[in-house]
Amino acid sequence: MSTTSKSPRDVAVTAWRVAQRSIKAYSHRCSPKKFTQHQLFAVLVLKAFWKTDYRGAVAQLNDCRDLAKAIELTKIPHYTTLQKAAKRLLKTAPVKTLLDETVRRQMGRRQRVPTAAIDSTGLECSSASAYFTQRRKKVGDSWKKVAYHRYPKLGVVSDVSNHFIYAYEARRGPKPDVNEFESLVGQALTRIRITTILADAGYDSEGNHQFARGEHDIRSVIPAKHGRPTTKPASGRYRRQMQVRFNRDAYCQRSQVETVMSMIKRRQGSHIRGRSYHSQCRDLRLMVLAHNIMILLRQYVFYRAGRESFRNKDYRGRDGPFGPPPAQTRT
Image (cartoon, rainbow, N blue to C red; front, top):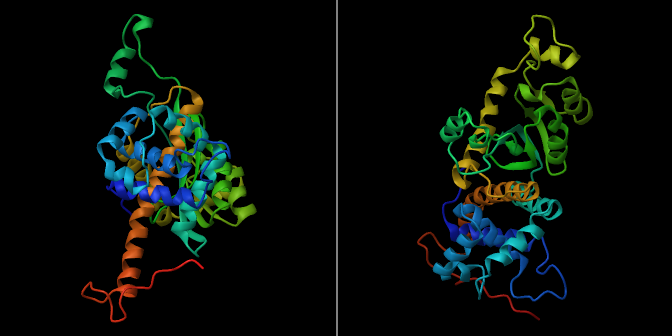
């Protein structure tokens, strides 16, 4: 299992390095060039890490000059600069490139994931408590009621062993989960190869089994419980197999994707600050990237610590018998 980093400095530096390998330094050749897109993306990840808004992220950077210096920020950006950078960097295409880089760093030379799970969750539109919302539903006057008919919805495909996200779907609910299976799994297959995919009954359909097993040779484990309860055999070849030969031992690992949703909500908040549909989708994409970066940091730092300690230093922490490694000079 994996844990997320608690250090804002390490999170910012990791996000900055991921952006350096993924996107251009400047969005246009005539840009003011006060800040790079790598630095602005790192600040956006810090905003999600701190569970604050654009003004709050700028205020905390002003108080933590060493943190700004870690990503080579000589000047703190205005909060409107961050808001405009979010509109540009959190579109579908840049986020795809950034997510590809996080997966490449996490997987290394490996391409196959033994077991992955798929699930979706809804987030709150405001910070109002669920108790307050339920109480206001019972108020007699209609203009005094508080009820949410639409909400931001996030669907993910994650690894059950390390909680890393390989694909996401940012939409607005309520919508049925069954229609998102092909798009999520297809997106994940552009980055990795999956042996087994686990899903709950909300994704149960013969078409989803056919897509996974028939087209991509993925063993799908989905309980055949969609629709009204009945004693009749399920329709379709693969759904009947789920009733007769259901792999309960493998399906028990599906709960790890619920842990992914819990990690996102606990570390980054359970409500979205965006008001419009597009701003809510941007916030969901940022949550996915920040989640991967916080997990990637723990794995990357452990890997680097082991490699550097044996390459450049002896077991007592000093420089080895040949001294420190020679500096590289440009010819």
